[in-house]
Every structure is written in C-alpha cells, then in structure tokens.
Amino acid sequence: MNMILFMFILSSSLSIILTTLNLWIAQTNPDSEKLSPYECGFDPLGSARLPFSIRFFLVAILFLLFDLEIALLLPLPWATQLQFPLLTMTWTSTIILILTLGLIYEWTQGGLEWAE
Image (cartoon, rainbow, N blue to C red):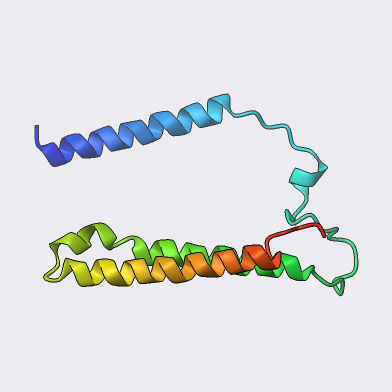
C-alpha cells in the first residue's frame, strides 16, 4: 500500500472517529447565557452606548502582541538550516528580550490587574 494513501486513510478515519466520539459523548445543557447571541457578558438588550473598560482593551492588545510574537517565532526551527543561523538567533533573542521587557513594564505598572 502506498504510504500517502495509508496516511490519508489513517488521518481520515481518526478524524471521523474523534468527531463521532465528540458528538456521542458531549453533554449539551444549554442555559440562558449559552443561548445568548453575545458571549461577552454584556446584556444584548441594554444600551449600545455603554463604555467598555479600558482594561479590557489593554489585555486584548497585550494578547495580540504576544500572539504575533508566536507567529514571528514559528519559522525559528528552520533557521538552523540558513547560511547564518547565529544572526537569526540574535534577532530572535532581541525580539524576545524587547517583548519580555515590555511585559515586565506592564506588570510593574499594574496593567495586568483587573481589580484595583
């Protein structure tokens, strides 16, 4: 049997088995919050002019920043096959150092605290 065909059949059957198990075992107990069209915790029938907390936006921006850091570091395992891997590792270390210093600054300023 061809290896590609074997892997295709194996991955397809594993996907079907896991999906079937999920549908069979999963518990569905919908409550009013799960049936609500908004999952952010705000009342959908209230006023649309209520202000959001600035802390919410700060944490969202920090999440996006560190999510982008992961996207920048994904090709790093292939950097060892480049012509100058030391240069790539230096730039990677610089990015991680800058982001770590930024996280420490946010932490010391209290930007990660939800309650005051």
